Length: 196
Image 1 (tube, rainbow, N blue to C red):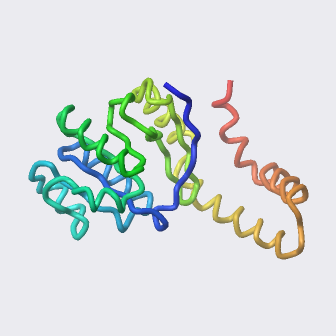
Image 2: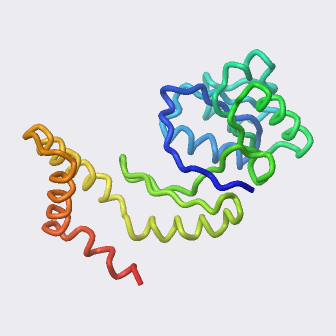
């Protein structure tokens, strides 16, 4: 399998969809929603009341047709039988849609990362689809180290950086001032014991 290039996508600029059913599909839908995918569509290959309730206006019974696939940018396929998932993935790829079939590395054009969100701070872990379980364990460790307070810390540092930029500071000065700020606050000292 080829190596992947990590990126963070702006869901406001893309047409996103999920297809599938069950608890794994519901979990993925919730992660998409947490990531800001307010306009995403949700196609259920089997009736799923929980998914319908969460997806609300985005919910559709049945799988997407060719015309719908042609308008998508990214599609997650979750909880579907292997043959159905493979056929949908092939149809989507034919329309140049980036596809992820959960737990089927050979059918994925991208992999999902295990993530920790703290406001705008996003920490991710990827094993290139080789061991999602390992990625989840590392994610749990990061979640303990970088608690909820880190969302506000990023907001504080972000506002400070904007002030420095307004004063005319360029990248080298911004980097130095950020380093100094972090040393003064001691925030990273709190995570140092976890580094070995």
